[in-house]
Image 1 (tube, rainbow, N blue to C red):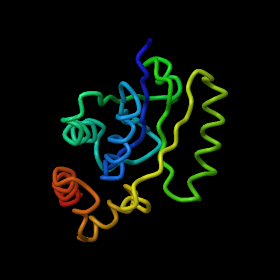
Image 2 (cartoon, helix red, strand yellow):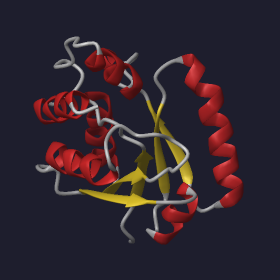
Image 3 (cartoon, one colour):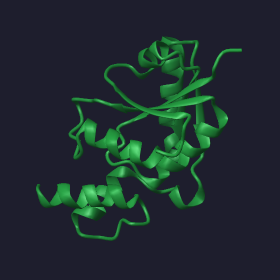
Image 4 (tube, rainbow, N blue to C red):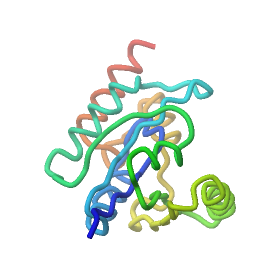
Length: 162
């Protein structure tokens, strides 16, 4: 029987406890989980791809079935390259559903070998987004209940240098 590999791709700018929640849960479902940082020139990221990868490695250090990587281009093409059978997506609120459904349908057309698996976040992370975390941090607000101490330290240092 072949190894069941899933791909959880995103910008992770910054990685949050909500991302970690999905990583932990998806890693229990699949034999191997690849968490891949998308390198998207269309978006202006606060953290560099190497910084995001390092933070994700720190967050997942104890998870032996999780690997951290990066990619450019179409997620489904990267999934094909990695022999992934599933794309992990988080569904926080009803408004996410339409976007995720559209994405899943397009991904299915591009690569019928890969299914989309949507996981609902644990209750504390229902309304958590990286964008909100960055905004709260920019204004000096408390973010320790949204991110790991390493991510908070990195964000604070990065925002001081802006």
